[in-house]
Image 1 (cartoon, rainbow, N blue to C red):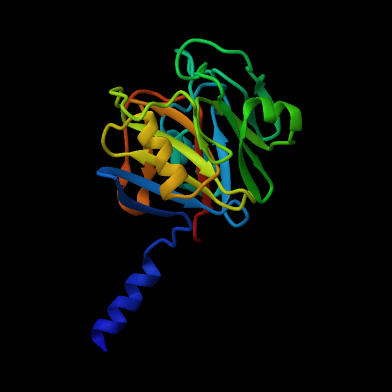
Image 2 (cartoon, one colour):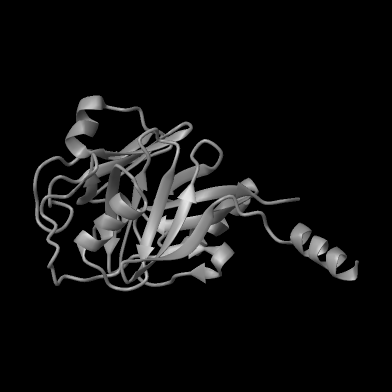
Length: 245
């Protein structure tokens, strides 16, 4: 009885994390994946504070949320950015467009077309290939463009090579066809694009997935006691929860 009472007390005092994060292994590589239900969880993008300065770190976002009586329950860097931490591609926050869509090829991974856009709308999250995004013109409450696409309608990006030797820590997101599930992943060892894309397509069974970044990839998952720290970030994506009173 004493043990049962102690366990019950522990369950009441632990935070109830809505986001599910877990460590997995797929084909000899190690990943952490976090699953979000956009219909029941508040998923947002964050770039600048009220003074217009980039948040840069997960801790700064979490601190700012206290004014709303809320906190971060999960976060990840969410797209490529310039030295001043401004987004390289399309960016929308709270319905306001900060950066237009970039649809032309360019240098670096972002310009390795096709790239894509993560679009958050009430109750759903979708990864679009950029030209499809332009054609459909969805009304996104939040959006971030990055690249390359990892999976496009069930196929790996055509430029990914199975025998590539380019390995980095990488992170990204994939969404289900009905938009009701977003799975964020970060590799815990250096992986190729082909390996990372295969994770989303073959292990997670997601039809579309988008690369966020490599090398500077970071994760905030307090339920796993994980709070990666490093260079200041540009766009940050995270789920927000109300702090219990």
